[in-house]
Image (cartoon, rainbow, N blue to C red; front, side, top):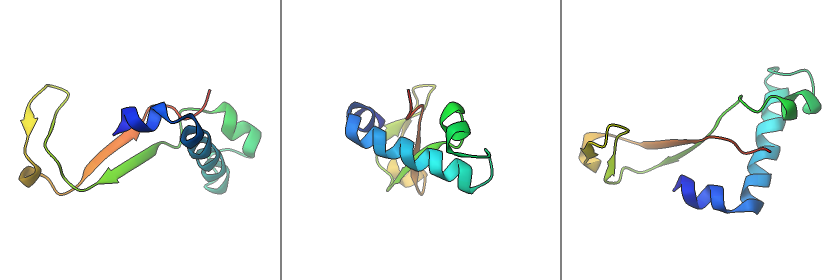
Length: 78
């Protein structure tokens, strides 16, 4: 899922615009320019229904072992 999102340049531009605006609206940065310069926060996350996956330690996890699948995108901006 994150690979598909990261490969979609148009979507990444939209997500970056959302991230920048959210940063300013939450008061994490004083304005949009400062938000664009601070690429580390806030994070964008994608939530989905459970599917079979693996952990960072490469342990296979069945969908019945968790309630929600969450992936954060590393970077949406340049």
